[in-house]
Picture: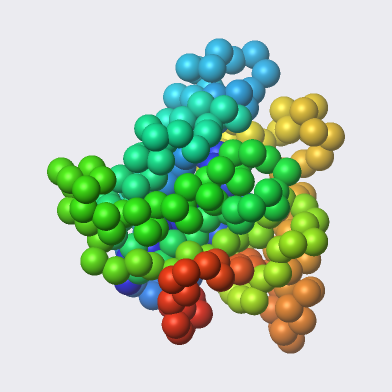
Length: 241
Ligand SMILES: [Zn+2]
């Protein structure tokens, strides 16, 4: 099976899907990690070009850890919009990955961050538009529309209702190792910027979803919501690990 995960920022996939991707890799799936923005405002002290280059290398290291193909769309951090050139990049990513299943952040203003929201919306559009021959005719279209699963948003959202809970207890250490590839985002900078530790957020989130699921002996969970817009792919949940 082929799997395409979209993240808005270079470390977003690690936060909300990496355990699931590792689980899919272990069962033999081919993984594509597509990062929409270059993370070029994710630093104090470095220039935009410097931090973007660092974050590209960190994302590559994380993709290498899981044996995934990295697709780097190089959009401007916090200034990515649903415009033609950006939408075409998402369609191109879907055509390259030819996924059986897509993961993305939840669309529909359900996350605090506009890049997350836009990434979810463009993934939602691209999964259908990637079948349309008149768009980017030089790239072969995909032969079926894959289901789209939305990962959890950052923090509480009353409109987010996950139905699927992936036990990542065995993959938690791998998830952390992938997350720690993003060395520029560890340490003081996010504490200075947001007053919180990314490390703590990541661990607390997967523990929270495990608690919500309530399955005995399951310590860490990544949760997903099936995109319930046409076409809804029957039996999509069977694709999850
Ligand atoms: Zn993000």
